[in-house]
Image 1 (cartoon, rainbow, N blue to C red):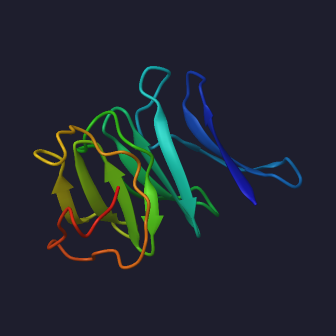
Image 2: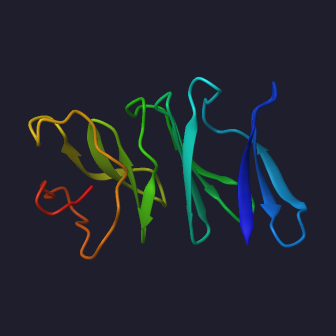
Length: 143
C-alpha cells in the first residue's frame, strides 16, 4: 500500500511511500501549483493518483512510478476532493466535470447554477450507473 505526501519545501514535490516498509518509493516535482494558501486535494484509484489544487490546476500521475499522465490548468478554483470511477475523475466546484483519467479530456459537465440555490458542489460520490456522455443531467448524477 502506498501513501502520498505533499512536500511544503521551496521545491514542491509529490512523494510516494511504502506504508509497510516506510521507505520512499518515488519523488517527482509537483505538476500542479499548490501551497499553504492553495491546498491540493487528491484521490487514488488503481494505478492513478488524481490531484486538484485550489489554483484550478489538476493532474493525474501513475501511482506506481509518479510519471505524469496529464495536467490541466483551466479548471475552477476552490475545488472539491476528486472522485474516481473506471476511466473518469470527477472534479467539482461551481461545475461538476467528468474528465477521462487516461488523457484529461472532459466527457461531461453539469453547472450548479440554478440547482438547489447552491453555488458549489460538495465532494462527489459514485454509484452505478455513472453517465459517460455529455447528456448527463442533475437527476442522473449525485454529488
